[in-house]
Image 1 (cartoon, rainbow, N blue to C red):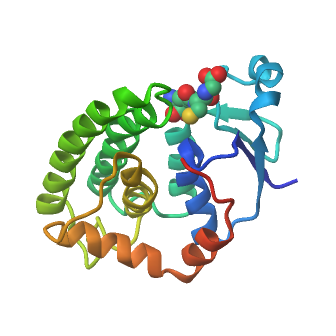
Image 2: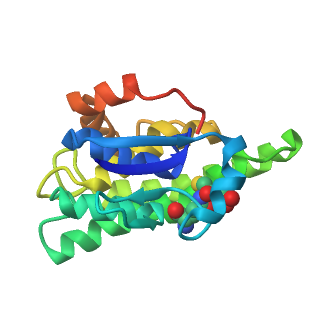
Length: 203
Ligand SMILES: N[C@@H](CCC(=O)N[C@@H](CS)C(=O)NCC(=O)O)C(=O)O
């Protein structure tokens, strides 16, 4: 039995791990729970939320970033030194911790009249974070880390391609370094194949 990643039928908090699987061509079970089935499944999960990882040995874990970090370490994509790991974690936490709730808040806001203000708030904050990362934390040739591609690049790719559109944002020309990261990840054949093949979902 391969490792199983259980999540909603969305990119969401599961996609960074799926991108890691795609990049390493790691065989996994892409278990997608339909909304109607979630209430009965929820109490059976470790903390009542997804994503949930089930390892080959049957052990279950949750917390999307922890799961992604597990595979980043396993695949040698977490950074080559302790400082590089800190650097990659900082970028990943900016995307997964700081940016993520802003985009989720817009996506699941039922009142359309409230969305413009949420989008304006996200645009201001996300532009600030991306401009700082762009200026100071892209150390390689199209990679966050000087040593080459890491899970931080996949996280930036995930943010720019999957999250920014939710707030009607695109990268403008000033984000040269981040654009180089996104372009490099997008050009990786295994990532490009996954992006074509994966279920097309809004978040
Ligand atoms: N900190 C957790 C949050 C998990 C979480 O809130 N997951 C959401 C989907 S993104 C969920 O399962 N929502 C359904 C629920 O809480 O019932 C993580 O990053 O994995």
